[in-house]
Structure formats: C-alpha cells, structure tokens
Image (tube, rainbow, N blue to C red; front, side, top):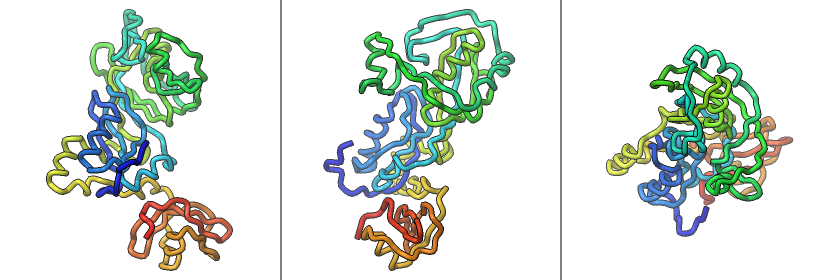
Length: 302
C-alpha cells in the first residue's frame, strides 16, 4: 500500500468495525480514510461483501502490528442453506444444482463432529488464493478450473445454533486462519447427501477482537461529530496482550529509542511489551542471553 501523502495520523490504535453487508473491506477503509483524516490505515482479515461483523482496522503507527499478530483465529456465525449449490459457495453466486432436502436438524447435528480438528481444505475457485501468481477468482470469472493444493486448517468448535428458516441452519464456527466457511458448509452438505451453500455469515471474533468491541460506521461517524472518536480506538498494545510487560527505566528507554541494545538485562529470554516510565507503550523488544534488543517501535523516535 502506498504511503504517499499520508502524513501523521491524529488517531492511533485499533478501530474494530462492525462491517455492514454489501461493503468490501476496502470500501470500509476508503470511507474511514475520510472520517479519520488519514490514509494511514490497514486491516486484518478480509471479509467478503456479503459478510458482516468484526473487521479490525489499524490506525496510524498501529499499522505496524497488522502482520505481527500471533492470534489469527476466527469465530463465525454462519447460515447454511440445504438443497442448493452455487458456483461461489454462497447465495451471491449462480445456482449450479438443486435437490430435494430429506434431512433436518437431527441428521445435521450427528455429522458435525466429523468436521472438528485438523484437516485439509481445498480453497474455492472464487477466492483470492494465488496460483502461479494469479488470484483464483480471476480464472473462475473466465470459466476456468485451476488445480489447487489443499491447505491445513483447524476447526476448534462447531456448534448447532438452531434453524434460521426452511432448510436453513445456523452454525457457530471457531477456526484457524485460512478456513473457508463456504467450503466447510459445502462439505457438511455432502456428508448429509444434499447440496449446500452459505446464505449468511457474521464474524463474531478475529484474533483478540470481538463483536462486542466493534462499532458500526454510523456510530463512528457520530463519534467524529461529537469529538469522541478517539475513545472508540483500542490501544495498540491489545494486539500483544499475551506477552509479558516490561517497565523500562529512562536509560533503557533512551537506548531502545536509538535502536541500541541494553546489556546485563535481568529479564528472562523472550519477547516483551515495553513501556516507558510514564506508562506509554513503546513497542516490542526481545531478550536473549541478558541482552535486550528492540524488535519494533510503535512511537515516533524523538
């Protein structure tokens, strides 16, 4: 992403957006650039236009944390429609098959345990996965079928959440990064002996961030008008909440800010969230053999 003419951001941190249906993740970023007054934005975990829910947006210096997250797990509330299949795996696509439905909630709940745990999943043709440098969806739009390699995923939990309508059922899915819920629902349909497609998808959690942490675009606009927008952003260090805290003294802070190592550090080996004497989150550092070295700063060097 180009950093041309971005300038310093008046806001810093993570803004968890409750993405509306019909918007791409990039649509949300484009709108927020105007609201936040900066081009310095990044996001974690792209959502398809039909999906809603948690979209973490990283603002200002927090953008550096996008690729440093260790928790990439996701939780979704998905709605599966039985009796039809589409070329995209969801109801936005062209129907490719229909069949009468002779199974229901009881049969569905019986097959769900088969899909728990580690497994291999074939990426769908309508996806951004690249083969030979080209996204699969571009080939799919040309009517081409490209050979794909299955990828390892993990489904941590798969809970039946009730019926949503005739031949439609809700499932709560906790899974690893890279899991295509559309494909999972199609596979469940095959286990039931009927075609299946995804009719709705809401992301409830992405890494450390939950739906309860999120704000609609309308709420964000209103906060901007009221002068309370900064209160909606979560601190950057929430990305690294799993790491231990290191309260540095003034001398150590000065060395870290200059990129210099600190010797005879008494902390055990590992990664640390480092804070200044005033409690400001400075960034990440690593200790090894008694030497503390800066890994990434999230504040401007003085």
